Amino acid sequence: MILTDWLGINQCSWSVLACVFLTFCYVGSLYVWRTTLSRDHPTTIKRRFFSVSVIMLITPFFIQYFFTEDSLKKGDLYMQLGLRWSGLIPAIIAPLFLTATLFLGPLTMQFLSGIWKIYAEPIYWLSSWQDLVWVRNHVMAPLSEEWVFRACMIPLLLQCVDPMTAVFVGPLLFGIAHFHHIFEQMKAGFELKAALMISTFQFMYTSLFGAYSAFLFVRTGHFMAPLVAHMFCNHMGFPNFSEIVEFPPLQRVFIVCNFFIGFGLWCFLLTPLTSPDIYDNRLHWET
Image (cartoon, rainbow, N blue to C red; front, side, top):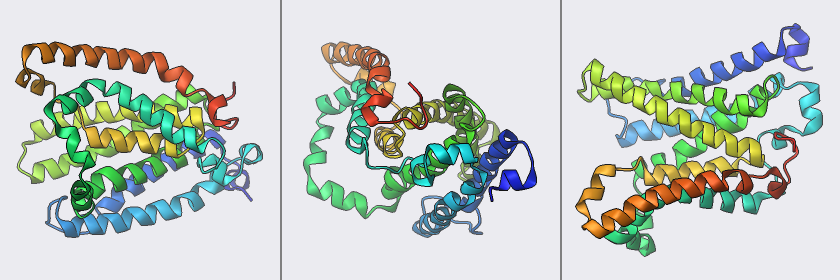
């Protein structure tokens, strides 16, 4: 029996409360270990890998009790979570290409500086996989965050709001979840005001990215779509505009132009490249 039917409480309220509860559980799992070590210490990273993995494991079993019968008639739990074969290949390629266009400026900077050449070196990838900080930032963080905040939360929100509302409301929890960094920044020596400003900025851009990621999820109906986008964004990082001045004048113009061209292409391609028809998606976004 579905929990909401059993208790007779408003479905929408339960969906929102479940999402809030999952947010607290996810953040809480990072601090369940009492330690004075920094977040980048190998011991801290390994412990957090374990606790977050536990949250990822139990979350699907938790949210299934909040699905309505109508939702489950449209698709089983696996489909709700974006785990399906149909449309998988385009769900990996198209969002990755789309996200790359948004980073055309930074990619141009990497090309002109020669940084891109290291990606062809096997030693780069071998050393990266041995670096726990790299694995956390490029693999575990995107994997766990997209699983909990997109694959598990968005389907719950879609039971009581339309897709576009879910796209913009859901990521607010994702952004708020990043406020926990304020404690680590203060531990690192930042004053409260500085730590608060940094965390507020993180809240803003993580909420914006969360909206984009949620949009990819509801449009494609695939977990892999926001995952590859998140991994790529974490790899690129927030653009460092101050580095543009380090290039020769003509290259600066080229780089700046590509920043605008990339953003324009992203806006132009966003809707057609995420068309639900491409991904055989009839679950989260009705055309």
